[in-house]
Image (cartoon, rainbow, N blue to C red; front, side, top):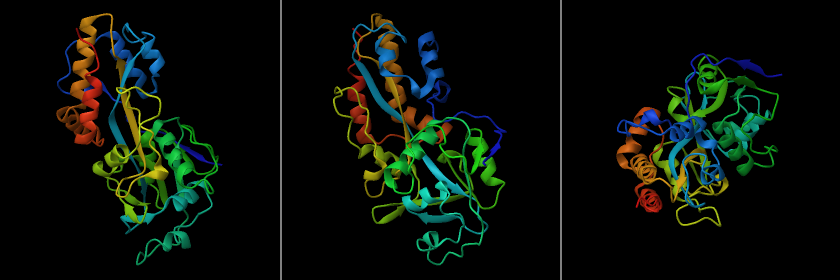
Length: 307
């Protein structure tokens, strides 16, 4: 049975927090603060139905503004990085690969002296977008090894469970042989896995995570200002990092109140701007959207009617 590790330093990640942006409007309406508290799980239908400001139409603007790479981090003495493909990562977290000197790991890390050390995989005890992003990756790239569906809740009873990002990081930091997944900005000095994409191993970086989204197609059947990307880790382009959580801002194309429309539009424009993205990256360690993607995002935001 798995063991649960408490979260000793609660800290939220994976949501677009309003206080990450230094130059936000002084007065934010109650519905926008409510949207902030709900985070990325708000559905477009709730926006269009007027739950967050009175919409004058059922059209929405949806834009990606927060890209968070998910690192696979480990604690092994004297080893700072390892190369692993998706099937090996899936085997580790499924429990079929249980020792760090397993041939599957050794074959991808020539010259690395791997210890005869039991692997202890750590997962989230709580439901989380990070966990859903990670299991989506496992399901997509290694379905023959990882036979569970993507979920924000961990599907197995094996391994150790930790509360929140800080709980996972604490468990890995304090346990030799431990490995887990977490918001890359919180991985600190832990060992990092470079993940195989096509013929190369890609370590996480802001540019590599942004490249994953930029190379992904849009979801079918959406309007020109609904930029929901169909991110498929199994189709990750060369040089991109294949595990990244994407969060969106969602608003109405038309609002009944012109002041609300102007405020929403200004807020969206700042969050998507280079200044807003840099402020978020400094505060939270996310991957800023690329200039090419920003051009598309700005065009979508411009659909918000303010007159």
